[in-house]
Image (cartoon, rainbow, N blue to C red; front, side, top):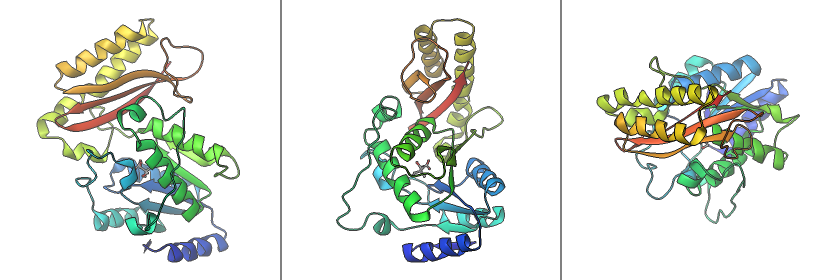
Length: 284
Ligand code: PAF
């Protein structure tokens, strides 16, 4: 695996892979890799001739009071994991390379980015869309893989790729991969490592309460009181607050007050011991 930090070297490496006739899959990450990321790499290897992984802790997607400085950084350990998985190329640009002096462009995707994490983290999805657009232009992959754990992020990226004609030959080149979970149901996340032992134990209440809410909604219960019960269950389990618990259209992310014909998704963000956890599951 080649680790590359400069754009000109990246372009040469990508050209060599493509001249060799290989299709290229990109797995964008912010590092602190876990089994969820490695699942994306394995899926990418199954679908493409070569796999590029990017590691860049993108400052533009963190709010002023968020965990940018504390976000775990472990490039050497991440590189070793990717090497063991057989990734071909690690793209690890510096902040100066991504956003040189005078950088002034922002990509903002309306609609799908509003509400849920978009409301709770103003500017977050502009930062995500901007960096992912840059990564697509830098790496020029045939396909890119993202975890479904960040469901709204995936919807934002799909919308941006369609709107800006970024994917070829068709939009399926953006592939969502199902969330990887711990034995007790907690979705894997780089931020789980912030949890104390006690909070980690309590955090399992999140997927549990979500499953109960989904069973109730699928059984005909009204959405608003069911979500209210879910929020109460999280607070009772030791969560400090719930940012949102929404039923949304799986593709447009429009808020739903009752399940309909189209696929729906339950999206939740809640805070425990200073850590913000998000999760989502299909409904119906
Ligand atoms: O999901 C992430 O790790 C990040 O939001 C992404 C897609 C790599 C953009 O920085």
